[in-house]
Image (cartoon, rainbow, N blue to C red; front, top):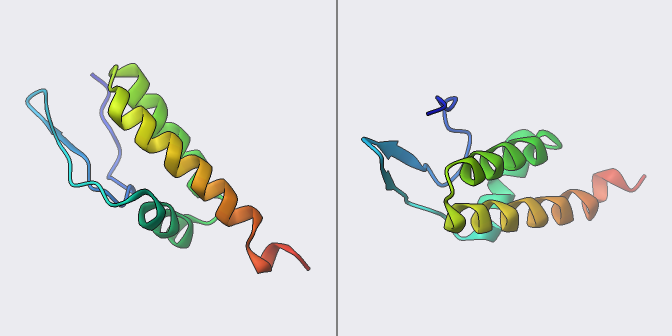
Length: 84
C-alpha cells in the first residue's frame, strides 16, 4: 500500500488498518478550499488523490475527487485574476 503525503485534502480522508474513515466536505467547499490553498497546484493534488482512489478501487472517492477536479478547473478558469 502506498504511503500518502500529509493530507492536503480538505476532507481529511484517513485510512487505518484497511478501514476508510472519511469526513468529506461538500464538493464545492472542498474545491474552493483546495484552490485557495494551492492555486493551480490544486489540479495536480486532486488528480493525485483521484489516482490513489483508483488504485485502491474506491469508486466513491474516485467520483468525489473527479467532482473536486472538475470544480477546481472551473474555479481556476473563471478566476478574475486570470483574465487580465
